[in-house]
Length: 225
Length: 389
Ligand SMILES: Nc1ncnc2c1ncn2[C@@H]1O[C@H](COP(=O)(O)OP(=O)(O)OP(=O)(O)O)[C@@H](O)[C@H]1O
Ligand SMILES: [Mg+2]
Image 1 (cartoon, rainbow over the protein chains, first blue to last red):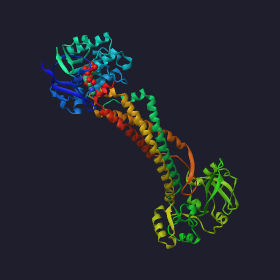
Image 2 (cartoon, rainbow over the protein chains, first blue to last red):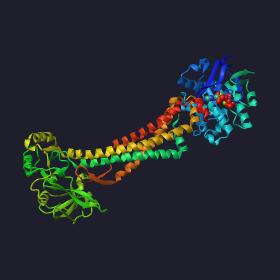
Image 3 (cartoon, rainbow over the protein chains, first blue to last red):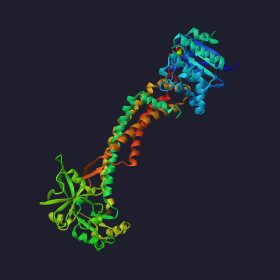
Image 4 (cartoon, protein in one colour):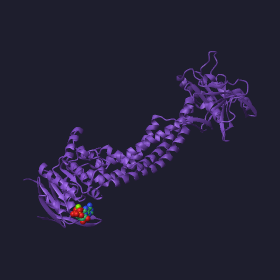
């Protein structure tokens, strides 16, 4: 098995006024292609920060983040944006659908950044929506959907451009148990059936259990189980 | 721009009130801006239409306006000796030596207005073929009769056919109303030059001379002969068109400068309004910006989206303002003509260049108002933007 993510000596601090807030210290982590990793840990331990660094929306203070053989900590702003569009699918706790766009249009967004024609885009969007079981809700606006349905649309958006990696920050944190189970089953299927590498941050031990590997973060240090 | 335009349009719909208020602010400023330009342009077109290119006007140098110009009889004879003056079939030179005076008439609201009364010679119909008697008849030469321009007759009391106008210690009978293709002559009263000279005891001293050239092309030759004659040193010659154009220039420029000055000050208000609207749009959509960026949209796309939003607002405002202003062209108003110190009726009129300048003005407000908010949105840190939810 090849490695898709290699993190070496990663440190990250935030600055508030002139105060340094250290979050991650000398962290090392490897994730295999097709892996399913769950990050757990107390609030403030740096889970979201680590996930953001892997997904290329935040910058390390020092150390290397190598994803799919490129060191993303060295990329420029616009190169990194292009890289994200191709490699990363995001799933957020509060879904982050664009409220004025329909389910279809939300899912189509990542494809606008590709060279696909309108017709090809339509095919991809429909496929993604049918994977999450919402092809009949295509033209609904997010407001007309339940939380679970919104999160499924968000997952369709995350996978529509066929990225290598899905990152999900507490994807079930705002859902009831049934909806949460649906989402977790869907994630599992994306991992096993579609070979997506998945990293999920969660507080829920039940959610963590569907992952192949569970890591604990505590005060910026990784405790591998 | 990568972010779909429907994202922008639907956001307008989702905050209708704010959008409408901002659009109205810009529309209002553009309305005033366009109205001022239309007014200046209206005055110019009215006055320019008053002059024709093969008519030549002679006035005393430094006279500001016809009434302060004085041309004595000797000079009138010198002018007759110049080349290229058109002649009638009977061989008479087409020259009108015209005394110009100003009288007062009452408006219906009790205010008084200055009105130009021009004495003309029997040949003046060759000079102003656009003058048409609409009602009544032409005045008779040799008696104290007058004809009145249609816009005067419309707007002043005692300016109808059969009315008597008193000035220079005498009664003058109004016998006809004339039109003149909407030109400035419609704001004048005409009578027999000799009668006016007699009534005002002017001897043969007139205000200006208008004459026709045998060909408009010969103006330069005529002017050279005119300027070469030492006896005419105190006078100057222009085509009638240039004369009225210069007269309108002063007024049109005054209106434009004052109007643009005022609207530019207004426009700061509208621009700040647009800026506040856009800053609040950016603040309300911080998480959306973070999401777009996480999905891979570039900073430039975000900048373009918010700038487009602001430009669209200003475009709507600009179009609305222009639409409202164009309704003004159904109205005509009158004002004091600085060039002649008498009333001049004109209508607001638009031109493509006024529409373009108004749109550019509106878009400038949109671009300036939208720029800083758009930059703020584009520069947002993704992680912080996403945490803002
Ligand atoms: N952009 C930021 N600016 C300043 N401090 C930050 C920023 N992001 C995170 N932090 C701080 O870094 C620490 C780790 O934050 P992080 O969000 O990674 O924790 P977390 O493990 O995801 O917690 P939770 O379970 O509550 O989501 C916290 O103390 C947080 O206050
Ligand atoms: Mg977190």
